[in-house]
Image 1 (cartoon, rainbow, N blue to C red):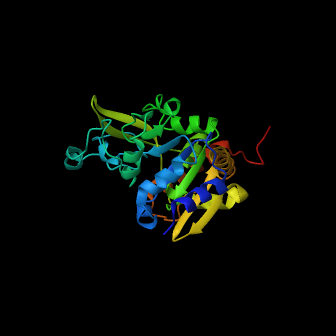
Image 2 (image 1 turned 60 degrees about the vertical axis):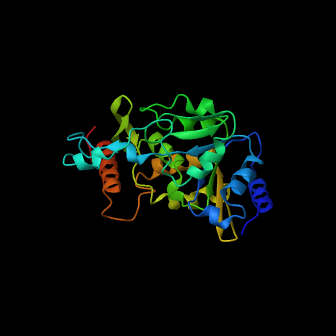
Image 3 (image 1 turned 90 degrees about the horizontal axis):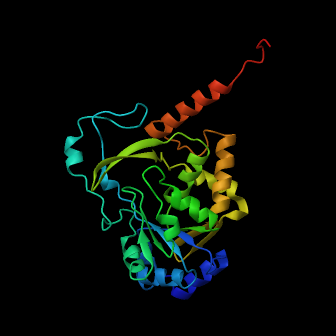
Length: 277
């Protein structure tokens, strides 16, 4: 099992410093591989950096209306039973990212704030500036602010598909996204810019080259990358190849809709070489 001192050494070797915040995505099985569990992991991380951001996503708040926009990867209507079981988002709604135990530890520190997006909220320590202005129409605001703060992204024993920041790059590159609805204390609310499939995100690693740092030890896999490099590389790739980072499942509804939108965008800009002046 990995120890507290091993974790600190790993984080420092990545280049983590106290003044640079970290977006941490934590694998559900990580506590079983750390000597002392999630408390040891969080203690090591918070001994290395001052400010961290943890996703607290709540998909159970989502509902499906009887009708909505086309090409939205939703089966409208006949969802009343599932809608009846949806939860209303509140400040205390538990995270469904498998990291609630880490969030509970974070909440024990002063200066912890949770943003109020009913699907894509975050908990941050000393990061109110990145969280307070996240709105329904700006779900990626925390990522943009963290980019301005020269933050890192840490994947701690979890897959690249969990890297939510890449969805911000997709939006910035003009990739098609979707609309979803979620229950708030004020009723159901539309949540635009909902991301598509993330199963192809591992393909980005090839293009990150030396910017991506990886360590495999004690049955754990860690990777870290500067958020700015991650986003800029992803945007450049998507603008060069609109079909990049899509998954390989040809039955994936979301990826197929993104392909369809990309093809339409390409065809609208294409001009025949034999066109007349």
